[in-house]
Amino acid sequence: MNNNVIHNPILRGFHPDPSICRVGEDYYIATSTFEWFPGVRIHHSRDLVHWRLLTHALTRKSQLNMEGNLDSGGVWAPCLTYDNGVFYLIYTDVKSRQGAFKDTPNYLVTATNIEGPWSEPVYLNSSGFDPSLFHDTDGRKWLVNMLWDHRTNKNSFAGIVLQEISVDQQRLIGPVYPIYKGTELKLTEGPHLYHRDGWYYLITAEGGTQYNHAVTVARSRNIEGPYETDPRNPVLTSAGNRDWELQKAGHGCLVHTHTDEWYMVHLCGRPVKEKYCTLGRETAIQRCRFTDKGWLELADGGSLPAVAVQGPEIAAHPFPAPAERDDFDLPELDVRWSTLRVPADESWLSLKARPSYLRLHGRESMSSMHRQSLVALRQQAFDCSAETEVEFEPEHFQQMAGLIVYYDTKDYIYLAVTHDEELGKCLGIIRSVDGVYEDSLCDWIPLPSGASCRLKVVIEQENAQFYYSSADSGASWEKIGPLLDICHLSDDFPAYIRFTGTFIGMCVQDLAGTFRPADFNYFEYKEHIV
Image (cartoon, rainbow, N blue to C red; front, side, top):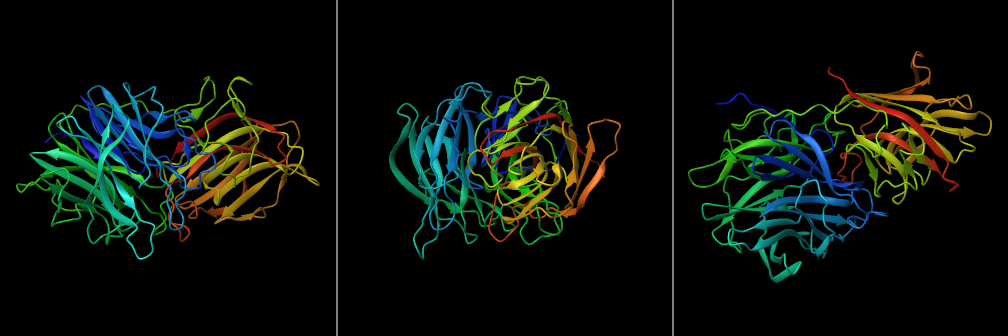
């Protein structure tokens, strides 16, 4: 036994629906990005223990046009595969998801280098979401996806369907085969196909993406079926064990290592205050094996996700830790930054207009699903802090800029610099809880014109405290506002289901449409060890 130990989750913070791919001795994981741009994060590892954010696949609006996409729409469950020198990425751009219907166009892009450039997208179908590509040993390629049924008195999760795809013709061909209806857990989705020892294994996600989530397995001698269900399903779940550290375990994807070992990546959630996963759904990994009867199981024979997992027989390959501070000295945004729905461009975001500053021009409000000027990174630790320094001279109350802790258009907390008719330039807190706006959490504080202001948030588990200071580095931080509960910044609030996670970043609004700019001198994000 080697001394490599994997500590879960391996991708902390909002990194759901992992798809893992091996090329030689390199390992890549693609994860869902939903309404955040660029689309599809890709992490890299050489040992399954240490991971680094390497790149994004969808970096152009021609590949992913999400302007107007609803909250928790956009990119769902990408599938990353590799065959004969080419990387393949299948993804859904969800345009509607509420009510009876779901509009789920599925696309394919390819690249010969994992870091791109990735091709323009090829449209495949819209019959359901969670598409996956399987490369068979005979050279044929197959698309599998869940089938969505909008009709009354029908199972909306109508099963898994299979259809051949022609790469040369860049389209689906031949009949659509319904291959699997799922188990009694229902809500069958997230399919992946594998071939081993004459068996086709179908891995699916079931039970819904919340606390009953699970991974189930079926197999067949023929790709078109029929598929028999593993009698010991689910293979992986934390359902019924609410005191377990890793909750919501499901949506699995397998990798066979170059050392002839098997692992499964899967999503999970870690709640605070009993049930609120404020970091979003994360990615974990489990060691697996095949039984004498040819069924997949976790290495310990159980079904609960382990926090500490034996790593593969591979030499350790750590990566440098990302810098805590970004001084905006580079001509392009660091790979960790994300924007909402649309790519960053010089019309609203510039690193060149004022060297060593990030300039954002104010656009639409925090409620907009079109053109927000917001740049943020994922909260990846329960105990952390973030700070920035902003120069902003608002002329009226419709202009705002500052530091935001953001889940979606309905839920955020915003330490904002704005203008008041009586106070002039001032600082205060804006909060939205389930779409209900409030700006009376504290007294608004007058600020001197022509001076920058430092803004800070400290998050400890489910609580956040905001601070401010003058730009003088020797000035002390002053609290502003009360200690705030941030449980509304989670998938688990309110009653309807959401799928992303908490971001911390900088934003500017100009609701009058005059594009008032704000300059940010730096941004610092620190994780605190408690």
